[in-house]
Image 1 (cartoon, rainbow, N blue to C red):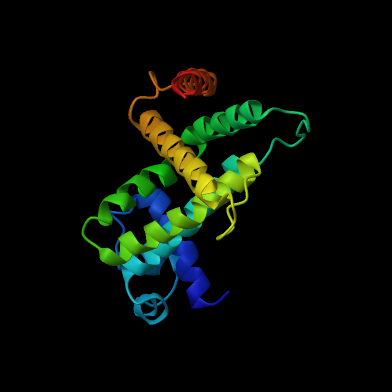
Image 2 (cartoon, rainbow, N blue to C red):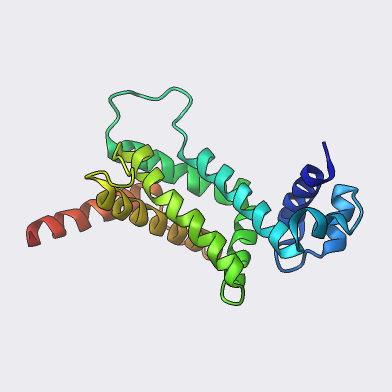
Length: 196
């Protein structure tokens, strides 16, 4: 493994152990067992490296919580699949808490860094159609008939995941369960349908 890969691994460790706001360049270099100057050489800045490490970590987390159970039931309803995903997200609040806290910290950096904002925005835009495709089978390919629907469906899922994560980080004692989220969405859908 070269310095670039070692720096990425070191940055990911630092994010989980120290958080976004408290990780220094020296922390990353020490965790990677790499010279301090290699951060700028390979990534341009500590912030660029931390952002890349955070995005990579969050993408892996997303793939983990979206994946089906080890033995998926083919005839499972969309609601059952979503409820299982939300249950994995809730479980990850314990197993992946340091990463999720660091991710929340990194979002505040977007306010003062156009580069961070652009990176996160690109990741969001790529995730929206992917969520719709993975969870509902809606093709989000650009120019497809379902592209707008895929973007809307993916955006709702992103809002649910972000909101659920925040509630579980702040107040796990009162945060909703997967079943409560499903019940709430079903009630909202019925209300929307009655308005149509």
